[in-house]
Length: 235
Image 1 (tube, rainbow, N blue to C red):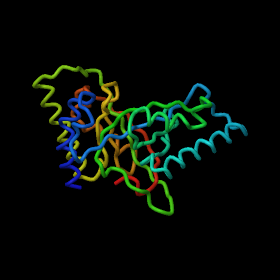
Image 2 (tube, one colour; image 1 turned 45 degrees about the vertical axis):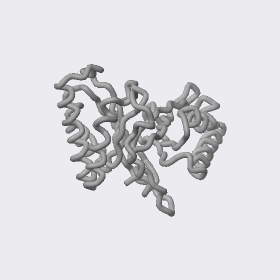
Image 3 (cartoon, rainbow, N blue to C red; image 1 turned 180 degrees about the vertical axis):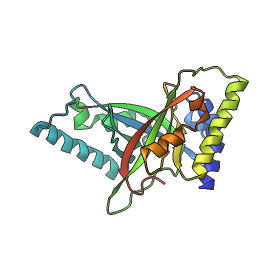
Image 4 (tube, rainbow, N blue to C red; image 1 turned 180 degrees about the horizontal axis):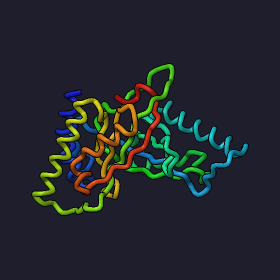
């Protein structure tokens, strides 16, 4: 895992410091822009099981399967904590509009059962792989990095040192094989980045997340979700 750790550290310092300010053409050669589609409970979402909702769920799954077969989705899966975010899909698409069109064609989105948010996200080019066959599912832990209570857009020497410590911690976790994907969001909003942890339990992932110096300082906060994905689709 040493190469992954070095790669993350090499590319994330400029990217994370200025997420939302660089164009895709300015990305390092070992990084790529993806589109992260969050699948949320929509205005028509309900926990009730009816023939209509079951049919819509089948159509929803069929649409996601078609995205995978067509090569548009690189990895997808549900969150298992039954929160507002039902799951997410990492898309390869030419533009934000293209990515939105792919997920908004979902019958469950059209019916309002599912709502979507799409965010540009940078990660390593080799971060996602074809899943193993026969298809089996395994649990990873997905962490959103969001603006914390002490976040500020200012750039100061103190914040630069904090950023260096944040990235050193990323490198350490990658070298240990616990952090398998990391990268910043590129739209400059509340969501600053994302981590994917490969651990046995949510508690272990949370303990690793708590080692982040930026989180300890309150500049960032990490929101963890158990993420069920096809085996082999992530490192």
